[in-house]
Image (cartoon, rainbow, N blue to C red; front, side):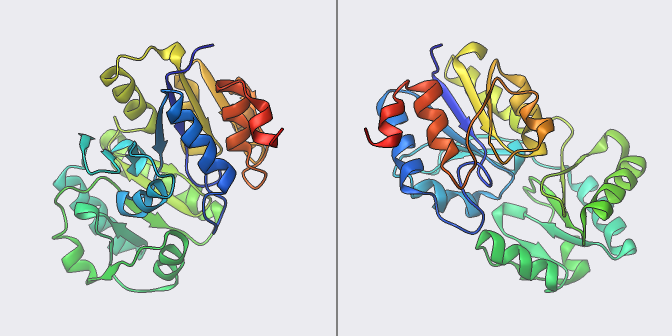
Length: 274
């Protein structure tokens, strides 16, 4: 197996919850790049919340952000964009206002929400980015270069309920999906981590069989299914593990680094320091 492109999810895969990237994971990425393999982060996060994490790896790599709507390198090179249409943004914003749902907008990689509430506070704390409370009327003006909208719910049951409502209301105008249990991500129907990964592979003339993908959550499923070689984290749900070629250790135990040394570099001794 010869891998030329390695794609990773961020939260729960490369990055443990509320922590920095571990030294073992950083070294694994650097060893991967030294071996001539292209490394890419694929995340639902905004670019501004991802680039600092990518910088900590000390490599200039492309980052797939907003679940595939924007691909941009650490150095600022834009590879690809696929933004929501302004009229759809307005329709969703009006619908969320009517239903009193907490909505977040990411126009031009800035974070906006109608009011600063517990949901906004939680989100800012989780990703380390400050947003702006601008009211519903100004939310309707932020329609330029919006890669995604995000609805934050109180629990997973409400997340599932709102996704069903959005699909009934908007049909194939949007793709509404769960990322973490309380997040509903809204992107264009043709946008996904998988689609963005294929765009990158085509750009670098890399075959499907030369790509390996690693992830842990439901929004990683299309990406994990799209390529011949896939790795599920040990902390992933059984549904995720069942579609993958390999299962590594958990995020907290540096399963990401183990996957690189075990399945790509064939240097297991480097992980354990032998």
